[in-house]
Length: 161
Image (cartoon, rainbow, N blue to C red; front, side, top):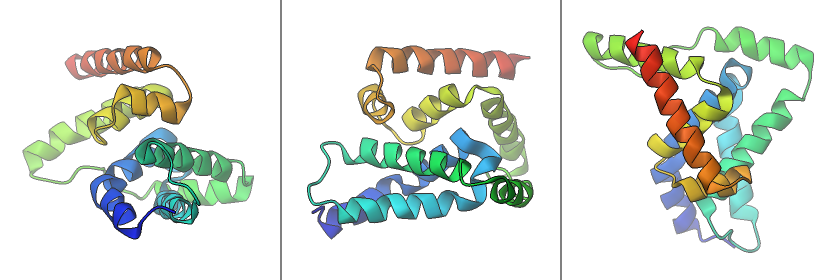
C-alpha cells in the first residue's frame, strides 16, 4: 500500500502538471473530466497493494489510460464535453503582455501532434525524465528524447512564423 503521506506529496508536487498533461494530450475531448481522471488516478494509486516502482510514471500512464477509456465512452458524452470545453479559457493567466506570449505558446502547443505535445509537457511542466515518460508510454527513452527535440523544434518554428 502506498503511504498516505507519499500520495499527498505526489499530489502536491505533480497534480497540476498531470492535469495539464491530460488536458494537453486530449484537449477538448476530456477537458471537463480531466480533474476527475486525475482524482481517479490518485485513488487507484492509494488502493494498490504494492507501490509502483515509479509512481509518477504510473500516474501518467493511468491518467492517460483513463482518458482513453473516457473517449471511448460514447458519442453523446463526447459531444457534451466538447461543448463544455469550448468555454474554457487559456491555461495561462498573468499580466496582459505575458498573456499574449502565453496565448501564443498555448496556441503553438495545440499545433503539435498530441504525442509530441504530451512528451513536451511531461518533461517541461511535470519535470519528468525521458526514462519516466518512456516507462509511462511503454516506449524507449531515446524515442522520447527524439520526440521532445522534434516538439521543441516545431514549437520554435511556429513561434518564429
